Length: 110
Image 1 (tube, rainbow, N blue to C red):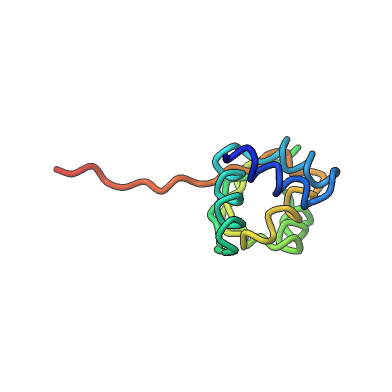
Image 2 (image 1 turned 135 degrees about the vertical axis):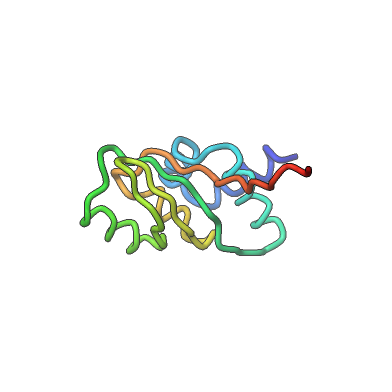
């Protein structure tokens, strides 16, 4: 079922976008986007990203121009908040090599 929905998402994006999204997005992020599309929803997602090299000021601007609100940068890794409808645009940025959905951590009960 998920594979069918994901296929629809990918086919709806066009072949080039589909390939980029398939190669750059981790499975949990692809699944989240599929779920959002299935219910015609959108939300801002917390993500981790990996770039081809250490992120400089120009690269940070390009990430922002693609729709990401960059929060932290450490070398080639960044964290950001991105509207779900902008993930495809962010994955099209040449130097972005990987996007991963951030996981929410909860404290262990005492």
